[in-house]
Image 1 (cartoon, rainbow, N blue to C red):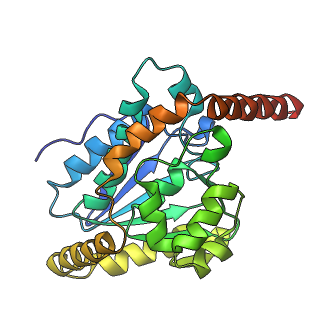
Image 2 (cartoon, rainbow, N blue to C red):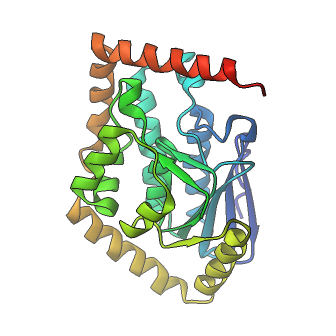
Length: 265
């Protein structure tokens, strides 16, 4: 059996037929760095060879599921922005394509790219106190990583436009009513509810689980295809070259810096 990959931004445990993949940068609210995205891809590739594993729980350590892509990591990187967009898209695609059923266990912030990763999972359970947002337009960039078609599938076109265009924060009630969340539970119950759901699914035949996942994913692709998501890299590069978009990013970062300065913590 191939040993699991070496991980620095994730943790991975396997207990029988259930694996746990945890975003593990708690000091950064599990912000998605290039390293973390690469490790998600590598871990999903490894899980593809584990036919004994039927279910993967995807969660975040500390106070959040994920605060979205790591602005400092991407801003300080010399990497091509287009390559960065591709990396996020490939991480989301890896979660969608992995042979196991995936359950996103959401608490705290689930923002931007973190919300895209959650949408790439098969099932989603959220704590009642979870908060969601898609702030990319306020940052002067469009939502990439194949996020638009994924959200259209779950929220519908009109609601997706509203949430992406306004960048407003929303709660699990709206996400559940739109069909994005399978369950909303009280915070202390979230981990147990997810564990029970994973155990229930793990008792079912692997073949049926996999075929059902593939059939539903194929139908979802017919509804809103991610096949053009590779073009997201060009859209991101164009946004970064647009003066108004660049100014929006500077304004957003300045406002965030002021808020951080006002925080006594």
